[in-house]
Length: 132
Ligand code: TYD
Image (cartoon, rainbow, N blue to C red):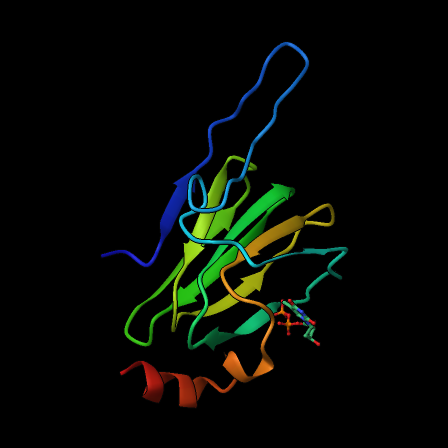
């Protein structure tokens, strides 16, 4: 199965413009405990470079774009996030990197757990061992 799993959000648009509703356990396939967003990323900066033991996330580029690299320790795939109606689902034990942020990029992330630094794997060699 591909590492790239999209969640498509219906756009509830009308003549006034567009609206997307994100609902825990409905449009988002888990209970959401945390929301954060990354913005004003400096040019030529890449972020991420970690995996989590126990964390599901959906990443949505609500404006602008960035390139997401996902790696499960066996395969590495990359995809552009550039649509406010498409969320990228990221499961447990997936190494992620974000590259090539556009100046206007706002990357919204919904997470299944509260922030816990102890859940991070920030060393790639350790990640490949854990993910085996
Ligand atoms: P980090 O996870 O390193 O960001 P990225 O992977 O996007 O580069 O987080 C950057 C800083 O923000 C780090 O000091 C931890 C802190 N942080 C929180 O306090 N809460 C959060 O929910 C997140 C995601 C990060």
